[in-house]
Structures are given as structure tokens and as C-alpha cells.
Image (cartoon, rainbow, N blue to C red; front, side):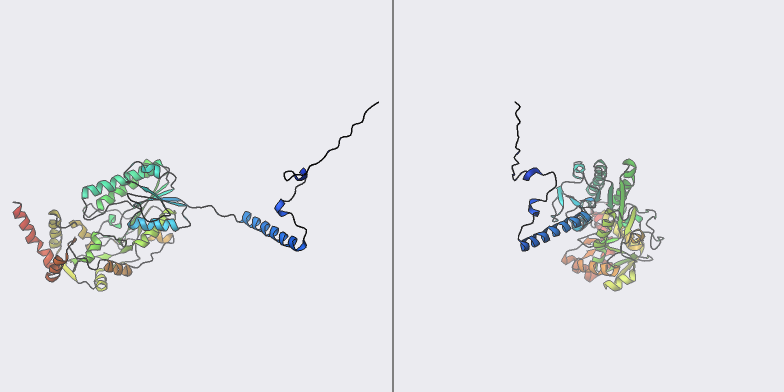
Length: 414
């Protein structure tokens, strides 16, 4: 007699399987309650979540875009201003700030080290661009030490950038590299020959930096170098022989010369550097205010009268004072107050950049910044010396240097 077995399958409902149906089921939180009013609110919530999901898929939150940018010399001056601007920009993914001390921009990633340290290569890893602003242009510092820092620092940054896979380095020099000459065109083309010599303060360093910048892409294929050349830079504590020119009791004018003044505010330099970082412009470009001011316009706007001297007297006195260590400015600095070196800013203009400042506005800010300072032949004077110089007149101060030089030479037995 056969036996028939009956098997009863019992499905156990649990929170895990919920009957394990083969058809899809809404998420537990989307199950509509039975109460009509509650169900209506629930369905409205579900619909809103669904619409939100659709919008998110169509317009996802953009991931941080733009380059990672490293800035050397980031703790002060132009470097600090650029670091702050880039850190606040939605077009920049990250800012790596490098200096010998930590700066105030908390949004940046800081690395405290000397730019001459080869370890900088590791700090630059992951960066898309580097803006090299760690330069020593101190008028009062030791020239040899300054040159060693500027040249070695630039060499190290360029080499480290290539080793770290950085594809763009932005160098900042000066329009002074074009040289100040009586036959210069107004304005000079950005492609004009660099005819400066190393006779003016820091210009030799800038020329060498530019030479290193031209060589770097050949030595490191794939590395792009952009050079930014500002006109007479003003703002953010900038102190140069050219800004000190406006601290004198009289404005020295060499007889027969044709000065022309073009300024560049640090704010405009910062925006030009940002353009270079974002690859809106590249190559060798100048930056400054549109146009220029003639010497007569500068005198009228400043209210400072001129002191006109023959070329031999002015250049001879400046050379002697510098040679015996009484002034920080060599005679070569005078050329930049004698002859034009105004530059075109066409490349930046073509890229859509415009200066926010005019030459007149920058001159006014410069005069306010140096108010209270007293300088003769590039040397800052104390209050007592300044009073004497002002009473005697700058002409006496300069021409009188001949007697001073003779006195020093007699003491030295020359």
C-alpha cells in the first residue's frame, strides 16, 4: 500500500524578507498609511523626494573644478594678496601656500620652507600651476645674497615644478627688463627686445630669472612658463628706487631727458596673475595702467617741483654716492627716471582683462603712502637730515655730494 506524503510550506514573514516576493516592493518608508489625510501627506512627501532625485540627476552638484595652484612668497606683499584672491575663487580647486613663515589665509594649505630647498618638489606634487613670487628686491640688503636667493630660488622652483608634474609656472619680473632708452617707442611692444643691463637695482636678477624661464621648457618638455612684467609697481608696502623717487623734496629731472610714467597697482597685478593661472593668457606679457603720464603731468598732480641737472652732474654724483656706500641706488636707476619704458598691455586686453586703476589714481595712492618719508638720491633720511635737505634744497644736496666724495677720498688716501 503506497503512502502519499503531503508537504505544507509555511512562509514566515519577517522584517528581513517581507515574504520575499519576486516583484519589487516600495521602500518601507514609502508605504502609504491607511488614513486618507496621512496618506495624502505621505504621497506628497514621496513625490517631492522623487522630484528632488530627478533634479539631482539632471543637475548634479558640481565637483570642485579648476586648477590646484601653488604660490611661493605667499605670506606677504603681492603673494599674500594673490593667495587670498585665489583661495576665495570658485574657479580654483585648492591653493598651496609656500613661504618661510605662515601667512594669514587660513583657506590655503601652508608649507613653511625656503624655496631653495629641494624638498619643495614634494610640496608641489598635485599642483597644476605655480606662481613664483618669492623674490628679494630689498634696496638695503646685500646684493650678492639677494642675487643668490633670487636665482637659486627660481632654479629650484622650475626644476621642482617639472619633477612634480606641474604643467605651468608663472614668473613675475618687471617691465624694467625692456630697458629705459631715449629711442624707446611709446608704448613698447610686449615682444620688444630686452635691452636692459644689470646696472639698475635688481634688474640683473630679473634678466637672469627670465633667462631661466626661457630655458625651462626646453629642459623640461611639457612645462609651460608665463612671464608677467608689471610697470612701476605701487601698493602693498612696495619699496623700490622708483617709488622712493617721489619721496624727494624735488623731482630730479636730467636735462634733455624725456621721462614718461606708467604705473601698475598691485591689485591689477594680482588679477593679471590670476588670468595667467587660469590659462586665459600666456607667453610674455606686460601689465599696467592704460597710457602714461608725462613728467609735467606728474609734477602738476604731485605738487612737487622739479630739480633739473645736467646729465654728467646727476649721473656722476649718483655713481659716487653709491660707490662709497652712502646710497642704495646705483646710477643705473636714474635711467628709468630719464627715458621712457612704457609698455603695451595688448595681450591681457585681448584676453578680456582691464586695469581697475588709472595712472592718476595710482600716483595719488603712492604719494599718500610715502607721505612723511624723506629721500635724497635714493637714501632715506631721518627727520633732522630731511629738514636740512629741505631747507637747502635737493640741488644743494646732490651737487654738494662732490665735496663729500672728495672728503672721503682724502681720508682714504685716494
